Image 1 (cartoon, one colour):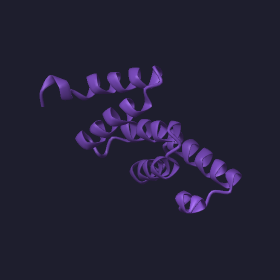
Image 2 (cartoon, rainbow, N blue to C red):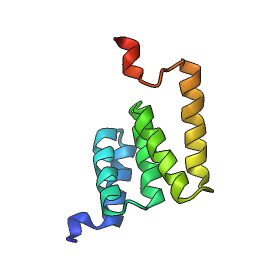
Image 3 (cartoon, rainbow, N blue to C red):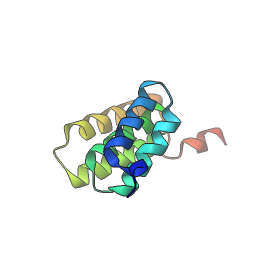
Image 4 (spheres, rainbow, N blue to C red):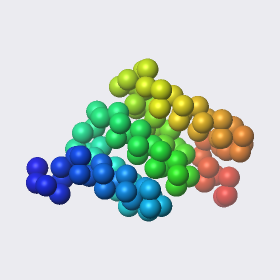
Length: 102
């Protein structure tokens, strides 16, 4: 692994992008981190939060669920899943949100 793919550096880069409101750039970096370390719950939670900030609810929920498979006691993933579920119910979203616009 060369320096450009050193996970702590990538994590910092993703955090900076997210703080700057560059969520799509942050998502790309978090996705790369998940590719490098697919069992890393922290990276999955951060990617789920980034998906959530982009209103990609299904992707966010998928990552939160994956974290809970890896670490059933993960508070961040539990809270994120609960928030996503509540918002989804509150907005009356269908399983396939795109179907609502067809």
